[in-house]
Picture 1 (tube, rainbow, N blue to C red):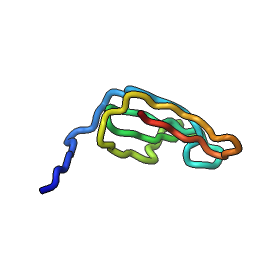
Picture 2 (cartoon, one colour):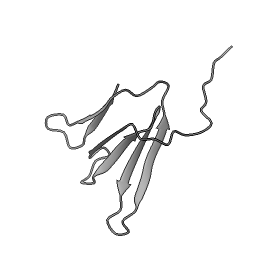
Picture 3 (cartoon, rainbow, N blue to C red):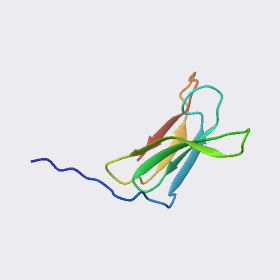
Length: 81
């Protein structure tokens, strides 16, 4: 027997937000935490709109979200607790 946890409706309230360069290149991105999901957004400077690059559910509740960069690294990292 297996247990499968599925949320039918996404969370709408943003609990944490950090900005950084998470996917490489010289693009600024925003990482949002919505309860138990993470969403990576990138603004488009030409149109002024924000595009979702990645959205993923995690098994748990996000209590803290921090962005950091390793010494000598070219892209940012995110730590979710």
